[in-house]
Length: 323
Image (cartoon, one colour):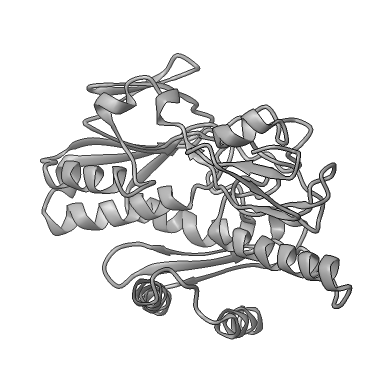
């Protein structure tokens, strides 16, 4: 990629552009955790997830450690700096694993310990959501330890930068994130490969470049819902630029996700407190599970398409009305 309005492909061919939209995502840096390849497991891609599932099926009881590695952010380009890019998958893993172990009569001979690099677990949502989720964690006898920055994994243990360690027979980790090499090499991003933009998703220097999704330095947390919001903003900005018509959408980020908890249970989360808002809502139970199931089925049969926008808008309105 070049700042000369030209993209160079891996095969050497070049494509000139008038405008460029970058949605390159983030890289899961497994290599940053010594011992991960030998002793660690993850759920972050279509190679790691089946590998983790095989390890779970072969698990016969013992100590399980689950957590997210600390990700480093550039001081200048990233405004909100979370210790972990997104801990939602950690919550989903720990609850679903608890359910699986109980179904297979392994829970009484197993422990589940979750570590977070931050002072708060799920630090991208507010106190009302914490008040609803924390009792669920306690009820399932899941232990959470705080300010633990993983530095290596061994066959039977997980080690942290503060010198402490946890015994582990099965270690499940969300690795640190970094930006794609192509961004680092192009010079249009920061030292970690993320790109800062203005509120219209436009590069502050190269005005014909727009950036959406996880590779945007201010996409925080790194969440699919925020990526779609950024895409809508970028599209409106792009249309305004080319046609002179319409208005650029205001960027209003929010955390919106549904966390499966095993069986027919799930937790829906909607919060904008991280961004200075007041919305901080949860919906627990089978209804949230049905919503998650509906999303998964729709996405599968449409090959990755999102449900119509009016469905989400109606759902958010309902949640805010009956909070």
